[in-house]
Length: 430
Image 1 (tube, helix red, strand yellow):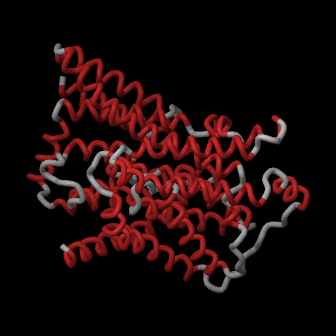
Image 2 (cartoon, rainbow, N blue to C red):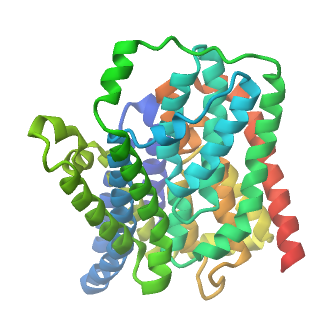
Image 3 (cartoon, rainbow, N blue to C red):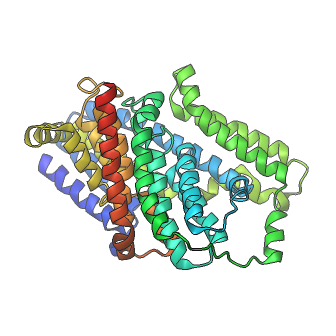
């Protein structure tokens, strides 16, 4: 049974990693993998009561992450529909390419900590299309956006799916992760940013020519008051979720769903006097249709697939083997981070959560914080290693090998710079 489970998991994993050449959506591979793994486990165990109980446990932890993601994605979609992000974009005015690079890097870094790295990447790449005319310039900016978004997501409990998973799972607490990983994430972003802005020194911003009619029709959709209200409400709700969890001790998905209800009610009241056609694209019902459901289905599939490895104790044995062979926690986690550049970091972190118990490694232990940093930022090394990279690849038509030649080296230097910063900081304060 164990051999069959490992083989099926590896095949499903390979299918997920090779999604583009195979032309098979990773969600399909994850669901088939989960279905086969649970079927084999149930058939070979024979204890149907135990399997049902374990499936129930796994489903509960998976559902918490999925509900949280659905709520967060919908809130961001509503803000975007109201052109709320123009509150940020309209304030960026500079003629130097290097200055713009620093601005974009820092805005991406902090925005990604509040939203998530995927959403931030989409928002920021849409922004640079409005600010830059040359495609070559935009490619460099897209690379820096991917690095900054992943770095910004790693130190915040709501900024990256993997950090959110560790937070919901109880491996990290919100204040500790922000204090512990902020400096390392900042170094991870600043090093590549400094090198790239030095390369672009002295070059001017070439802005695209704006079509007057397009600009005006875009503005007519929402008023300045509606933009500001929805932007501040959306960001406010996302920021309030960790506070809600700390005060009530309820899981984060409850806070995000509560916030979703509030923003839904405000939206309904705000547009109550408009006719159906005018308010149709601004409603929360439409935002729910716009969210990336295939990504959510992928998380369900991969988390349930990893759960079988946990229940069959494959992950615990792998952890023991790694500890005996490599020995050092920092080296093991560094390797996990670098592997996340090739394969998705979600199943890697899900696997690691099953490999190491909370009894052995309590919340906010070195292992969990360092894993949040490495798994969150390691994906920047290759463009397929993170959701932010895959989004940038599609939006700006970035070629895989262009990214390897121009950006991967920068991301790697930033990754190890952050590791050094985290270990030095940890030794000083612990």
